[in-house]
Image (cartoon, rainbow, N blue to C red; front, side, top):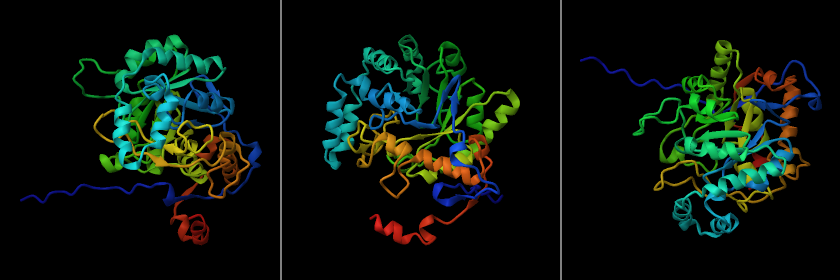
Length: 380
């Protein structure tokens, strides 16, 4: 008998398992350039608020744009299913833990009202803000004309896992290169975690990639489906695909690490791993302006009978401006994220994000094991 070959596993790394090595030269943090571009749109800060109902509504999208970043509004969430989304959000916040999963399944089973899609986009645009909106792949073609007519600036096509090749009962499913040609705006696609999937998606003509499956605080993909890759490894693999695609096409497609962030140090590690920007959910759900009222929940999986993520209590710890720019009122790294990023770039001698990609990283024990036990115990 031929001895079967065992499946080979490679080691993958998350945020807690690596550290950034300081550079041989340093630079003043206020001299660092952290601008980020998607298509022809440039943003002052490389931070995006997630397309989740507890994070982004119309008002939050406007506030985020005014502060130099970007927020993505989910066009299949509460804002387009209900004329009174604030009442629904309050109902979710009040629900007992044992009832919230069934409540979320019921709430998200309501049909999407197409008139609310245009109204939401126009409300953001009328405030002078950049409007980015998110749909799942199965609705991208049908909603695209409404989105374009309403004047959105960026279309995000997002599901738990997205690839350029998908088998379905439909004779012609979503073809990304056709979608990119049919809408007058950049198309960002996600989520993916592998070199091959990322490279194939970039070859379709999209303008950005969301990286991350399973790490989010309110995500249940790893528990329910067993699917996911830790974020440092996923970011490095997709950054390699971005660099390979740049060589073959002379076109730079940014990658956006999405999910799993708790503090500023993890943002910095994502950029050192190769991210061009990051997408945050639970951190922004803690903002006073967030619509989730101190709660956060996942919602990316379209299956009506599986948990749409789990509701978690994140509390409220500051304003959106405080979370982004300080002054910080906490010591756990969850505020003044931009200050943390600029300082890390400064000590690494990185003048811009692309130079930060070159920062050395090492495999390291979790920080709690290196003399920080008193800090962590005092926060409990």
